[in-house]
Image 1 (cartoon, helix red, strand yellow):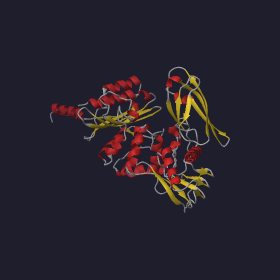
Image 2 (spheres, one colour; image 1 turned 30 degrees about the vertical axis):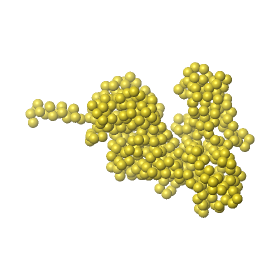
Image 3 (cartoon, one colour; image 1 turned 90 degrees about the horizontal axis):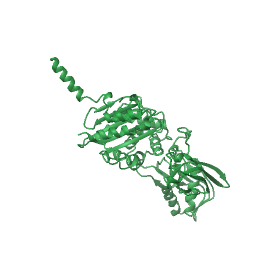
Image 4 (tube, helix red, strand yellow; image 1 turned 90 degrees about the vertical axis):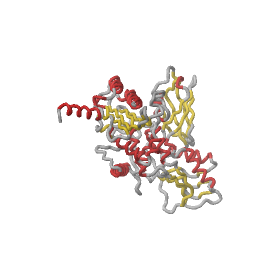
Length: 469
């Protein structure tokens, strides 16, 4: 081949090949430079769904911490392995039928890992008991959590904020996310704190102070809760400060242990329904001969993955991940990891170096590459479950964690993007349409001390995709 044709052929190949690391879109490169983020701490892949090769690949094979973007793997695997119509069941069982409104003996509540057993759903389950003739329980309410293998869980281990709702551990009988909901209202003398969650015999001791100035970004961290015994109940001491300019805000915290939270919630709801409990609320196992008496089913998985991905619910993601490890024995994280690894193999996805910890991304150990994430997205696009999966992702400028980003830009309403953030980590992955209606899968991972400043670079990449013709 003549030298001139060889040169021309090489230029054509260069033009058709993926953009090299040094050729990140200028707006993206400028945003990263302005944020002080190192080139080595960034991994990007952009690939048209109708192409066999990426348009852009930068550090694509580097294994990085994905933060909450790891939920994409957990939820896609769950949709495929469990099925979009999968539901979790919470059963109420008895050892004998009630007589004249009295249940002689214990009531057993057996969980299966429902990711979203809220107080209103629990109320419906208890309401079934009343309708079926139970007015008084002469024994105990026994909580059967045996569907999940016991594990030592420290809610302070991740970031030393044990009362934050996202640090609640997995529980086969997770009730109302083990969190209390408060409403804070500013006042001149002392902010008002309203306990919205039912919790029997819990006294709120409001010692909050009103502070001046603007509402700080860390306003939640300026409120401290502690629990102390109070007669036959508990005293919740609320201390710290709340800025008047914060206005009315919702606050979800988990100051109670799983047992104490379940005790307060169940006794409060049972009383509201006019029921009596002679015994106590305690842990235990359901006897082999117990009789099913009532059942509450969760929403189907296809609905629950929307909460997990759109609002990045870590507790729900943990519950779903553990449920993947339930093969007849009590579910464990190790069993879930093995099942997900085997599932990836059946999909023809080879992810060397993948590290799964809890499936939620709230972890310092989890690792995946931008290339692997993009392969997952491409596989999901070809799957029959594609509509359920994509619909679970936040829509840029519209809802979820992307509701306040890219409003008014060409990307708004045209990109389904899951986001993630930890100290030193910023990430985004999903799908976006360009100006001609061509759809792309994209993954953007930042692992850098300045990662929190990387939002502008991620937005710049989405703008770049949206502007392509």
